[in-house]
Image (tube, rainbow, N blue to C red):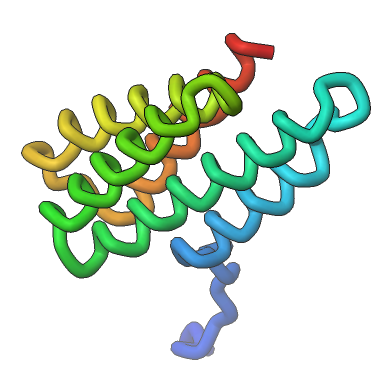
Length: 128
């Protein structure tokens, strides 16, 4: 009678980290942005929004209140440039609201980054 080998190969799980998810978001945002139709303001707005999501997500890993501070800073800076980059202002405000809601819930960093990315996609989809 033969026994089953203890070293049977198991299928490997596909796992990626927060850094990979944020990199994919950045590349997708830059590749999919229709600068040709909306001009350079869209490009600048997308760069600022991507930086805001990455900044909040990275700081969230170290300090939850720090992520809220980054969101407030983004909202303040977007208010200063309100006339030039209106879409970034809306994204920064929705990002601040989402961060304020997520901080007490204490989600995992990957979930936090995914929600902020979804907020960015929703804001840009609605505005453009």
